[in-house]
Every structure is written in C-alpha cells, then in structure tokens.
Amino acid sequence: MRPKDSTCLKDCFLKAHWEVHSRTFLMNTINEGNLKDDYALASGAGIGVLTQPIYGFQIGLSGFFIYNLMSSGIDDPDSLTKLSNRYELGLFDIEHPSNGNNLDRLEELYVKYNLSKSSITIGKININTPFVNPQDGRMRPTLEEGVWLNIGESKKFGFNGGWIWEVSPRSTVQWFSMANSMGINPMGVNVDGTRSDYHENVKSDGLGIANIYFKPKNNLKVTLWNAYFHNIMNTALIEINSDRSLSERTKMYQGLMFVHQDAINYGGNEDQKKTYMNKGARSNVISAQVGIKNKRGNTSLNYTHITGDGRYLMPREWGKEPFYTFMPRERNEGLGNVHAFMVKTSLNAFNSKLKTGLAYGYYMLPDVRDHRLNKYGMPSYHQMNFDVGYTFDKFLRGLDVKFLVAYKLKEGETYNNLKYVYNKVNMTNLNLVIDFKI
Image (cartoon, rainbow, N blue to C red; front, top):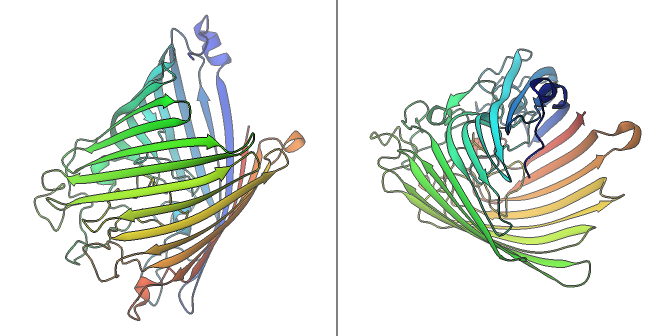
C-alpha cells in the first residue's frame, strides 16, 4: 500500500523514518595442525533515512563506517600454503587488507516513486534475489546501483525486476561495474586447470533481472526468475512451493527448484583464458525440500544436484546461492556433478525472542583435480552448524545477539596438498554478532 503523502516539503523530512544501526562482530577460525588460525573483532555504526512521500516520491540515504578493534595478522598469508585469509578479512576491506580504520561507505542513495501497491526505485539500493542478495554474513551487505520496479497490485500475481549497472560487494567500500566486480574474491581455476584471469578482463553493460510470481491457490506459489548478464551468461530459475495443514497448528511444506544456465557469446572475452564462462558452457541444477513447521519449530530435509553438464556459476561477490542445501560458511558455486544432502531444524521460545538452529550437510563433490567441474579445488565434506540468537525487549529493545559455530570435516581426497584443506575443511568457524538498531 502506498504510504500517505506529506502535505509539505518540511514535513517530508521532519516525519522521515530514521534508523541508527551499530554492529559488533567477533570471528575466529581454527584450522587443523600447523595451518594458520585467525581472529578479528570489528565494530561499526551507520545511519539511514527514508523521507515521507510527497506526491508519491521518497528519498533514501544511508551510510556506514567500520573499525578493526583487534585482529591477528589477517593480512598475512598462511606460511604453509601461501594462501590468504578467507573469513575474518571479509569483516573489513578485502581489497586493502591492512586498512583497519578508513572503512566508510555510502550505501543507499535513491529516489523512489510509489503508486498504489507498486513502486519504481532508481539509485543505490538493496535488493534480494536468488542471484544478487545481501549475503549478510559479515559487517555489511552487498548493495547495488540501478533501477528496480515492483508491481504488487494483485494478491495472485506480481512482478519484480530491473537493470543493475554497479555493485558494492560485501567486504568492500568501493562501487564497481558489474563486470569489474567479478574477481575481487579469489577466482579459482579455468576448466583446463590454469589460473582464472577474468577480473577486469570481461565486458558487459550490466545485469537485467526479471521475476514473475503467481499464486493459483492459497497454498501454492510458482516463481520464475531470469538473470541476463549482458555478453556473459543467462540464468533461468523456476521454483514451486506448496504447503498443507497436518493439524490446526502444524503444516507440511514442499519446495522444488530448477536452474538452467547458458553462456552468451564468448562468456565475456574471446580469449578463453580470460573469460568468465566458456563459450558453449551450460549448467543445470535441481533442488528439493520437504519440511514440517509450526509456531515453535521448523524441520526440513533438503537435496541439491548440480548435473555434470558444467559448473554452476554466479559471482560470489554478488550474493549467496539460492539452493535449499545452502549452509552459512560454504558454497557450492563453481561446481558441477554435485549431490548435496542437508537436514536442519530450528526452535524458538519466549515469544520467538530466543531462536536456535541445528543443521548437518553432506556434500559429494567432484575430485579436486577435476578442474572442469571444480573451480575452487573444494573436496567433498561434511558440515555441521549450530546457531542461537536472542532478541531483547523492554529496556534493551533493539538489541540482537547471535552466535554461530560452523564445523567442516574433509571427506574427499586432497592428495596431501594443504591448499585443498586450509580454510576449506577440517576447520571450525566461530561467530558472535551484536546488533543494535534504533
């Protein structure tokens, strides 16, 4: 529903919605044997404002700063593998590892026009899609610059979509074109095993995303997504979700997802050593879910299969993958011929102020030396996650505290090469996050 218009320009700002947000993040990674362990304590704060609409128009503006309060030598590589830090460095600026205090970013700056239950927004924005999303597992999320349209006039049908030309990935403070944002994180290897070299070597005018969803029944939803990455690749996704009541308070739900990708032209560069997706490459993914939930808890069984046709690719700088088997602290992007099994359960108490979660996943991946289907040299692994969070009220209203521990155990062959182990498997990652919002 369109917000009520202000009657004058002064009220537009005086009655604006303001938010102050502070976050403190403590992270510690423990690797096996003599491999390097790391820790970091980051803290920061930001402020944002969204004006009251006037003639349907609103202006949004926000920014954030971060400080490194304490850390190990996260800018130093591991002495045995010569590999850089993977987790703690992401709390700050991965482009400038030694920068611990000059970390500020203009995050949102946009104009939004509201019409009934629909809107159009242009500028620096924060969107959440299967392909580009906040991936809020560090200090700040991924943000985008573009134009975004939302049509929600009907309860049965809706549309979201737009064109994105710039992105500011999490763990950075700068804005990049969509093409040049790729490769800020480690690039892995090409299908022939040579080092990938697509950073600043691919050409694209931007990313177009379209989403149509419809609800033929109250308990059935069909969602279609398409992401057209100009000159590089196209990704299509269809998802079907349904549920049915088992009792007055309990529901069973199901989800089924299919993803198909194709390279466009040369995948970004005619020189296949410097391209992102090889000419003619494609991938297919199927992911399924079944679960039971009520007000007190939610338990689900999840499965994902990436076929052997090719690697599922999506720049890690843009967000996390949409598959039901996703678990924080690891990805299956860059892989093919994957079988992933995951079970998770969550419970809440004290009027949902206390929330806990437990998950276990088994991920059967191609051999680390199968470069065609294993971009980052990730071995098969088991993963176990436990998280607990508490949302305070009354005197401490606005305060949220969350703890997450993730443990990954090697299953696949690593050929006595520690580069396939360091910060990948046989490791524990601990996280304590304190958020305060006003």
